[in-house]
Length: 104
Image (cartoon, rainbow, N blue to C red; front, side, top):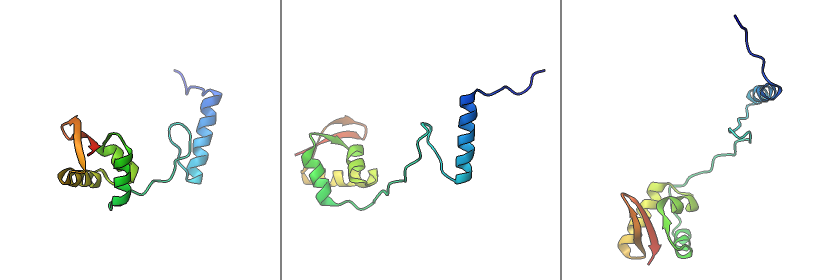
């Protein structure tokens, strides 16, 4: 009662491309672009770079800070808590752990 559906030419082309990439060993993202190499995430924070980021931004979150300095969020959060206690950074908004910081 009915066999396999015929694929459209676009679907056939996509299937051929994916089979060829499987053989070659490269992966693609959903958009069809090749996957870029993973960025290294550091655990050690360069305080000079961190202070430059803090001074140059109006306000920021822990996530922005971690992304800009290429460190883990836990490392960025520990640095911000330390800076908050020393008085170089102040909390200006946010709630429930998602705070917005500003240079003091």
